[in-house]
Amino acid sequence: MAPRRKKVYEGKAKILYEGTEPGTLIQYFKDDATAFNAQKKATVEGKGVLNNRLSEFFMNGLTNIGVPNHFIRRINMREQLIRQVEIIPLEVIVRNFAAGSLSKRLGLEEGTALPRPIVEYSFKNDELGDPMVSEEYIIAFGWASQQDLDDIVSLALRVNDFLSGVFFGVGIKLIDFKIEIGRIWDGDFMRLIVADEISPDSCRLWDAKTGQKLDKDVFRRDLGSLTDAYTEVARRLGLMPTNATPMNKPTLIN
Image (cartoon, rainbow, N blue to C red):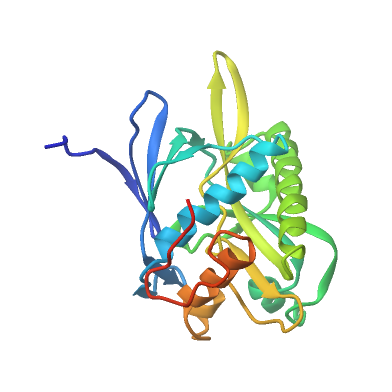
């Protein structure tokens, strides 16, 4: 029997295990869906499989355009090998259109185009509900330096350009998304890289023509089947057979 793997961390949607090589982790994608800081929960069959495949697709795309990230390779349907990083305790949010909390805060109608992409931060802490924080807070509390923040904004906007273009090409508007950034060391030299995941769990995606939501808002707002929405995103990106009939368990092309 294979030795039992050591769990390093379990979040709402993923589990991290010790990796097979030094400096690596295995990231396992769960079928759990949560919203409103885990007050609403469900198991959505196939979600983890889809998010693993979609995150692989986006991270490989970033690697191809020179945006450093933690992805090494997909291991199987639910797991991928990633580089172990020191996560900066921030969610980095990039907004292209008003939606969600921004619409509530500023009274903007959802879908209103913003004058330019807006980058904002929330402090990663579930107990506090991931409160928004300013650069002043981030520097004062030592979560990141001014130089780090400059690099984070640069990374976030490059990710935004890439994702916006990919989604636009398949008739999807990238409303907003969030990423996490990790530190890695090459000797004494520290670099920042994109970490966590990029999937419909972490992006707001609307059909460009109809405005239909193809992201976790489907679950948050009870708008139908989350698996169908994520499957549609994967299908448009060419990650599923075009003649696939909807199934409970998505079949993905390797």
